[in-house]
Image (cartoon, rainbow, N blue to C red; front, side):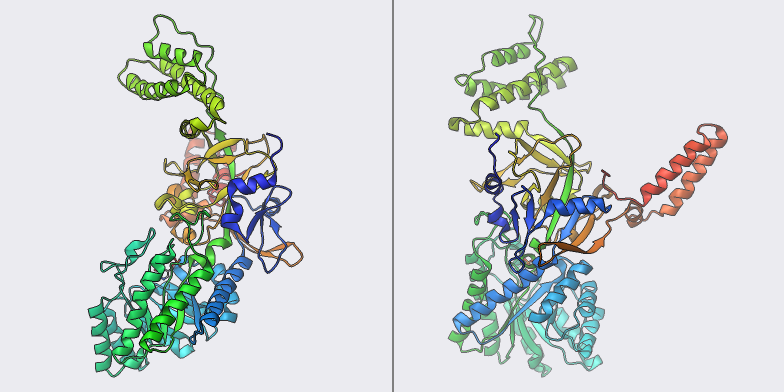
Length: 633
Ligand code: PLP
């Protein structure tokens, strides 16, 4: 097909469904990144070429701080608009949960852009608290302390208030209240306390277990009443300033958000009934990201950010009005929605396996050949649209039989090889025959996945897209280049790890919004790099990523989009070297060098290698230790 256009690519990959307004494809056929505030898109392929020219290899994680800034502004705008529209008298207080991405430069950017709107930070552990206290210097952002807490955590949180930080310690488990009160008494610091409610309303999505009476965190109604009584007994009920609940992450449906909000807000108004007057309601995270543009799957959302803000504000307002309780300041802990769009992982394709051009080598069965080979020959010879259905069913059965026959020693390796050649050859001819035949759509789908290419890619799923493996999260994945050309191949993405799970074979079909098992890609050209991007990768992936096969962090770059359409690279964060990952698993790279040197000396003295060979081996070894864990170009 020669008349393929950029518009065809946009439709095929559904880029405006999941990527607007940040990602698009330009007239050169390359993917671009933009923010509405700037309006001058930058070309991802050109950036990768520049990075390569400057020695920065793929895989590379590209972070776009301008997108972060745009997301912070967007959420604020949505809540301000909803509050104005509904006559809400409380304020909006956005808070970023540090656990979603703790990377230093990202947190620094968030607080830089967040200062204007008073973006706060939520922490779920002591190290995250240290990040929050040291990185957020302005006073109008809240620091929320969630998660399991010990004395140290609480002491640090309380003492930070003496530096002017606005810290709220949220009681996730009833026993924490005792420690908070005791430490506060000893330090003579009045704490600001929140209570996390355990909601019974069942949420939706992959993280439904965050709600319900067996959820890990939060107080049951009777524990909450006991906490209030305890605070009253200490005459500290005015310390209780916040009610928090969290519905789970990536909630696909607005209806379940609304249902949980109603229950959560009732906890808030009931505190007034118990004689306490909290100022904040913290609705937690959960605002989803539309990873596939469908509006109907767990990787998507059936609501916009504005609808989310409207529903949060409206629900809280109507219940508070009904119960004659003042409108609280609304805190959201949206993490995914703030940072997912800001990172794109770009990796290169190292090579491919394809099965649809396998020749049958003009095989003609002999009377001595096994019946199964003769059957295959007959299917091959008689192949036509008329025989296709029956032939395809027979072929599937034969595929299964061949394995059995080989395993039990009936077919030898040569016979199995002939059979498999025929199977691939017949399958690809079948596929060609039915490519445009609607009646054979099911068979076409199966043949596409059977015959698809494997594109071997320079990255690790476990390190860079762990949710794709762990929870079947769909990420938008597409080539970042050649969109003026027809993507003539279908492939699964296979990573570098020696793990059969190290692949991506779930993509969104932008026409049907069904999950498809292969991605349309271009044939590889000799000596021409081919780059693929995994988009919306800024939330959770970096920190959940692991060192499977010792593939470490990729290089990361921070790219600032300039007003004039250019860009600047603000930071380059070198990925892990081999020496780094080896030391993570307790090896001492220097000991390796000493040990190998000793072996070389012994080899030289025994005459098994020359001095030149030893010198070359040592040189390669030392360079490797300080180079990337990924493959070089
Ligand atoms: N707040 C709490 C208490 C959480 O546990 C989480 C993550 O699950 C979040 C906020 C962030 O959620 P999300 O990234 O879906 O906005």
